[in-house]
Length: 169
Image (cartoon, rainbow, N blue to C red; front, top):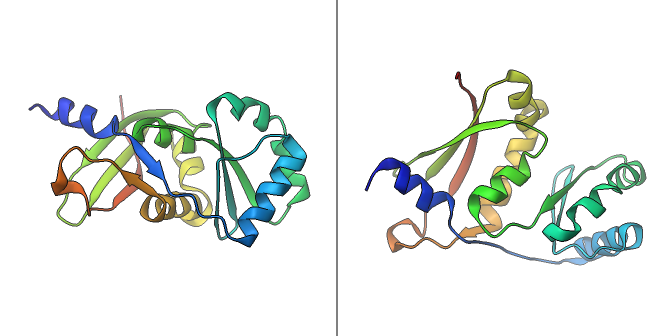
């Protein structure tokens, strides 16, 4: 199998996002619904980040309220993410405000790394965040909440990590 076929199979995998609702998440669901009239599918908190996952058909309607949500919770960074069925679409939804040039799979014995390639340093800086906090939050979500439905059992226990790099054309 060629490398492009392996990449295609890997990135087109169906994913599952673990949904855990503790009291804080339930309060955030209620808060989000009261502001937007949209019920989030999942809420994940990681330090100052709050990720609201919404259905694709509700995403643009929810994004209209993002400024209001952020003004009501000034100490938190609120992100509204598409709930996506495949790995590649989920990765792109985490970095929707940037131009991703390519995704490269790097296989290693300790875990797979997805190298997200950017053409411009500004896009990479947005993707990484201040002091790398955003990419750390995204990697936390992939480690703890996202499970890949691997077609082969040999990959089951390996974690997935995202890395942001610059590339040239």
